[in-house]
Length: 319
Ligand SMILES: *[C@@H]1O[C@H](CO)[C@@H](O)[C@H](O)[C@H]1NC(C)=O
Ligand SMILES: *[C@@H]1O[C@H](CO)[C@@H](O)[C@H](O)[C@H]1NC(C)=O
Ligand SMILES: *[C@@H]1O[C@H](CO)[C@@H](O)[C@H](O)[C@H]1NC(C)=O
Ligand SMILES: *[C@@H]1O[C@H](CO)[C@@H](O)[C@H](O)[C@H]1NC(C)=O
Ligand SMILES: *[C@@H]1O[C@H](CO)[C@@H](O)[C@H](O)[C@H]1NC(C)=O
Ligand SMILES: *[C@@H]1O[C@H](CO)[C@@H](O)[C@H](O)[C@H]1NC(C)=O
Image (tube, rainbow, N blue to C red; front, side, top):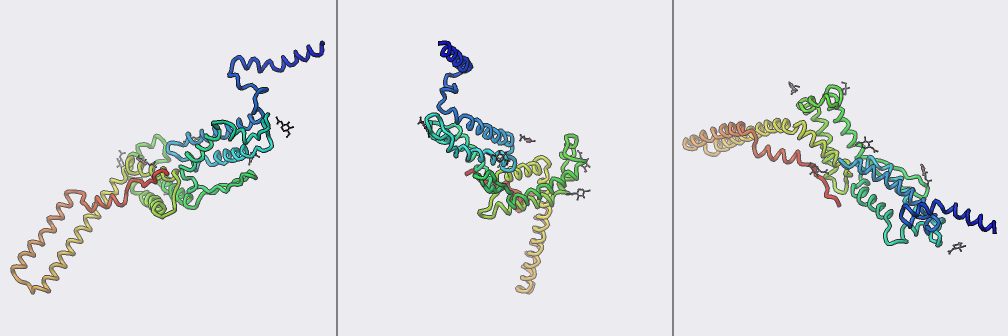
C-alpha cells in the first residue's frame, strides 16, 4: 500500500513539470506523449544549421553574395540535412525511422520546405556552381570547396582596381576621403586601365557560351560600374576623350575621302574646269562638317561607341 502510494507520488513528481508545461503552452508539446520524441533533437539541430544559413544569406543580400560568403554555412547545412535523411537507426515510438518522421510522416514538413528553399531559391538561383565547386562527400563529412579559376581571376582584377583606387585617395576609403572619391577625375585617369581589364575580363566570360559567373560576381561588377560611372563620373570623362578621338577619326576619314575623290577625278577627267569648280565647293564641305561636329560635342558615331563599350551590365535572367 505504502509502496504503491509512494510510486504514485513519484510518478506525480516526475510528471509535474510536464503538467505545468501543459498549462501554459500548447498541449501537443509534451514529451512523454510525444510520438516523435526521440527524433526531436535532430530537427532542433537541423533548425540551427538552417537558421545560420538563413542569417548568412539575408546578411549578404544587398548585394546578393551568398556563394562567396555563405559556402561554409551551406556545406554545414547540407551535411546535417544529409544526416537527418539517414537517421535509419533512430525510431519514433511507433517504430518509424526518424528520417521517415521528419520527411514523410506529415502533410507538411517545414524543415524539408525550408531546406528546399535554401537549396533551390538561394544557392542554385545564385548559380553558385559557377563560382565555387563543392566536392560533396556527405557520407564521410568531408566535403571540400574550391573556387573556380575564373572567379579567382575576376577577384584578382577587382583587387588590383581597388588597390589602385585606394592608392590614389589619400589613405584608404574612409569617410574623410569621400571628397577625394567624389572628385573622381584622378581615380578615373589613374585606374582606367585596371577598370578596363576588370570589365574586359568580365565581358569575355559573359560572352563565352556555357561559361557563367555566379550572381555574386555579376552584382559586384554591376555595383562597380555604378560606382565608376554614376558616383565618380568616370564614364563621362572617358566619353569626352572618346568624343575627341571619334571626331579626329571622322575628320581624317573625310580628308582621305576628299583626297581620293580628287585623285580619282584627276586621273579620269583630266581636269575639266566645270568639275574643278564643283570639287572646290566640295572641298569646303568637310570643313563645315568638321566645325559642326566639334560644336555638337557628340556625334552619332560616339553615341554608338558609348553604347557598344559601356553597356549596362549584362545580367542573366534568373532561371
Ligand atoms: C554581415 O555582412 C557584413 C558585411 O556586409 C560583414 O561584415 C559581417 O561579417 C556579416 N556577418 C555575418 C554573420 O556574416
Ligand atoms: C518496435 O520494434 C521493436 C524491435 O525492433 C519491438 O520490440 C517493438 O515491439 C516495436 N514496437 C512497436 C510499437 O511496433
Ligand atoms: C563533421 O565535421 C565537422 C568538422 O569537420 C564537425 O564539426 C562535425 O561535428 C562533423 N559532423 C558529424 C555528424 O560528425
Ligand atoms: C600603390 O602604391 C604603391 C606605392 O606607391 C605601389 O608600389 C603600388 O604598385 C601601387 N599599386 C597600384 C595598384 O597602383
Ligand atoms: C579635384 O581634384 C583636382 C586635381 O586633382 C583639383 O584641382 C580640384 O580642386 C579638386 N576638386 C575638389 C572639389 O576637390
Ligand atoms: C544592376 O543594376 C541595375 C540598376 O541599378 C539593376 O536594375 C539591375 O537589376 C542590377 N543587376 C543585378 C544583377 O544586380
